[in-house]
Length: 104
Image 1: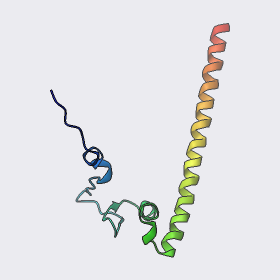
Image 2: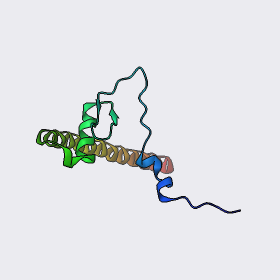
Image 3: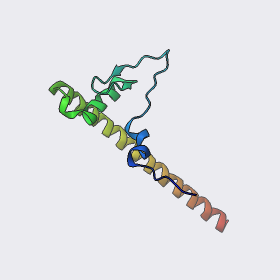
Protein backbone atom coordinates (compact mmCIF):
# COMPACT_ATOMS: atom_id res chain seq x y z
CA UNK A 1 0.00 0.00 0.00
CA UNK A 2 1.64 3.20 -1.14
CA UNK A 3 0.66 6.63 -0.07
CA UNK A 4 0.92 9.69 -2.21
CA UNK A 5 2.58 12.53 -0.35
CA UNK A 6 0.36 15.56 -0.27
CA UNK A 7 2.03 18.49 -1.88
CA UNK A 8 2.19 21.70 0.07
CA UNK A 9 -0.14 23.44 -2.37
CA UNK A 10 -2.73 20.67 -2.30
CA UNK A 11 -2.62 20.36 1.48
CA UNK A 12 -3.31 24.06 2.13
CA UNK A 13 -5.62 24.82 -0.79
CA UNK A 14 -8.65 25.34 1.40
CA UNK A 15 -6.80 28.00 3.39
CA UNK A 16 -5.32 29.81 0.43
CA UNK A 17 -8.38 29.86 -1.80
CA UNK A 18 -11.53 29.60 0.31
CA UNK A 19 -14.83 29.01 -1.42
CA UNK A 20 -16.88 32.16 -0.97
CA UNK A 21 -20.41 31.55 -2.10
CA UNK A 22 -23.02 34.18 -1.35
CA UNK A 23 -26.60 32.91 -1.16
CA UNK A 24 -28.82 34.15 -3.99
CA UNK A 25 -31.17 36.06 -1.68
CA UNK A 26 -28.29 37.73 0.21
CA UNK A 27 -26.26 40.69 -1.02
CA UNK A 28 -22.80 41.42 0.41
CA UNK A 29 -22.36 44.80 2.07
CA UNK A 30 -19.02 45.22 0.30
CA UNK A 31 -16.73 43.37 -2.09
CA UNK A 32 -12.95 43.69 -2.15
CA UNK A 33 -11.82 45.30 -5.42
CA UNK A 34 -8.48 43.44 -5.27
CA UNK A 35 -9.51 39.83 -4.57
CA UNK A 36 -13.33 39.92 -5.17
CA UNK A 37 -14.07 38.57 -1.69
CA UNK A 38 -17.59 39.44 -0.43
CA UNK A 39 -18.19 40.75 3.12
CA UNK A 40 -21.33 40.86 5.25
CA UNK A 41 -20.43 44.18 6.89
CA UNK A 42 -18.39 47.28 6.07
CA UNK A 43 -16.41 46.69 9.27
CA UNK A 44 -15.19 43.29 8.06
CA UNK A 45 -14.36 44.80 4.68
CA UNK A 46 -12.31 47.57 6.31
CA UNK A 47 -10.41 45.06 8.45
CA UNK A 48 -9.72 42.93 5.37
CA UNK A 49 -8.36 45.88 3.38
CA UNK A 50 -5.98 46.86 6.18
CA UNK A 51 -4.76 43.30 6.76
CA UNK A 52 -4.65 41.80 3.26
CA UNK A 53 -4.00 44.84 1.04
CA UNK A 54 -2.23 47.51 3.15
CA UNK A 55 -0.07 48.73 0.26
CA UNK A 56 -3.13 49.44 -1.88
CA UNK A 57 -5.07 51.42 0.76
CA UNK A 58 -5.57 55.15 0.52
CA UNK A 59 -4.93 57.36 3.55
CA UNK A 60 -8.67 57.48 4.34
CA UNK A 61 -8.88 53.68 4.20
CA UNK A 62 -5.84 53.39 6.49
CA UNK A 63 -7.44 55.75 9.00
CA UNK A 64 -10.71 53.79 8.86
CA UNK A 65 -8.72 50.58 9.38
CA UNK A 66 -6.98 52.02 12.45
CA UNK A 67 -10.31 53.05 13.97
CA UNK A 68 -11.97 49.68 13.31
CA UNK A 69 -8.85 47.85 14.53
CA UNK A 70 -8.94 49.78 17.82
CA UNK A 71 -12.64 48.96 18.27
CA UNK A 72 -11.95 45.30 17.50
CA UNK A 73 -9.05 45.22 19.97
CA UNK A 74 -11.24 46.75 22.67
CA UNK A 75 -14.04 44.26 21.98
CA UNK A 76 -11.58 41.37 22.14
CA UNK A 77 -10.10 42.62 25.43
CA UNK A 78 -13.60 42.94 26.91
CA UNK A 79 -14.43 39.39 25.82
CA UNK A 80 -11.21 38.03 27.38
CA UNK A 81 -11.87 39.90 30.63
CA UNK A 82 -15.39 38.41 30.82
CA UNK A 83 -14.02 34.91 30.21
CA UNK A 84 -11.39 35.28 32.95
CA UNK A 85 -13.94 36.60 35.46
CA UNK A 86 -16.37 33.79 34.57
CA UNK A 87 -13.68 31.13 35.03
CA UNK A 88 -12.62 32.60 38.37
CA UNK A 89 -16.23 32.68 39.60
CA UNK A 90 -16.72 29.09 38.47
CA UNK A 91 -13.50 27.98 40.17
CA UNK A 92 -14.35 29.62 43.49
CA UNK A 93 -17.97 28.47 43.29
CA UNK A 94 -16.91 24.84 42.81
CA UNK A 95 -14.22 25.15 45.52
CA UNK A 96 -16.62 26.58 48.11
CA UNK A 97 -19.32 24.04 47.23
CA UNK A 98 -16.79 21.21 47.59
CA UNK A 99 -15.57 22.62 50.92
CA UNK A 100 -19.11 22.92 52.28
CA UNK A 101 -20.04 19.40 51.18
CA UNK A 102 -16.80 17.90 52.50
CA UNK A 103 -17.16 19.51 55.94
CA UNK A 104 -20.96 19.41 56.00
